[in-house]
Image (cartoon, rainbow, N blue to C red; front, side):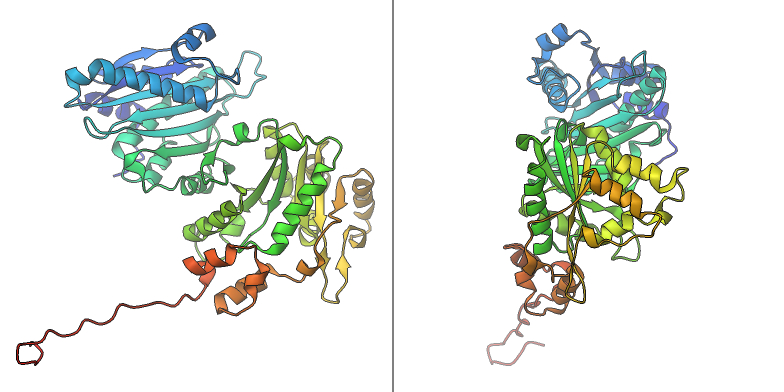
Length: 489
């Protein structure tokens, strides 16, 4: 049972007193803070086989091998550390105590705040562990960002989350969501952010890591999570490092031909920008918590979320789930991940939303403050036209604003911050996502032609978005007959 009141020292002591659990600690970058927690709790000899910290790069490379990227605070370094340390545990201790012990290897590679406080503090933390003696191992890996403004506080936070990870893996493994929640015990998102988590191994075969990513965002542990077309979770700063980002946000329930036309033609136009390297462009389909919760009375429909993601991934899309309602907050986040150009694809209704001053009442500088971020030096909006009820195609030059905002809009147009998507399929403009969804739910004919090839089959085969699948019941069992032919009583 999850007990949120249990403290870090109590967790470490319980593990130390559990004679089944035995392993090693390898920590690089901010001291040996997790191992120190176990030493301070008492009885550490029952848990710790070895602690080490290969700070020097030459020593680290000699032990774990060099990194192709030349970077040391990366997931590949963490995996090498886990491979090496867990292998040594089994090699050296399996014969002696393998019958009664569940081995583990804890590792982290982090960069804490430097003396000048000019760097971004973050790190990779992982645990490889058995749940039964001689059983195959599991991995739980997280990526964190440290937000404390003092190095010593960051070290303390790392020690706490390390203990929480080990404790959660051994005592909450039956409920991965509880394990995830317990990582923040004695901490807060103001101190440390968890922007990626991945469960692997035979004891986590039923865990959907995309759903775990949703829990991170929903519980406020991070503002955004990312996964690739193969459904595997990605760490945003690594996946988007030195990348141009082209993003489309929406409900995408379901994806229609309009969405694909927006993406494909927006992408072609993005590549025509003079400062774009085509080999470094990544396109993202973004779902927000607000859109995910828009169709249910309480919380988020997890199946609906996974249904949308499955379809997007089947179309080769990288998917982001975020808590950003305002576009300027989204841009501020993306700008932290890359210094290259960012393009946002949107329709006229979203452009209207951006220019509504009421959304920025909480900012001291109002709409101008938000626009300073949204329309920063390397951000551009690509606007898809809208078909009006009178049959007129509405574009950027038709955009109507209050007189006080019109000069601001003209300034952005003149400085190439907003542009029409000029190459579009006019036949798609009549497609309304809401209307397609109504047709799907009603089982009407004709919506199939309004969605990308293959999407209709996925929706029908899996009865998605309320599609009325025919339920086939097994035939009723026939009563057994006696030798005389009459039914048995």
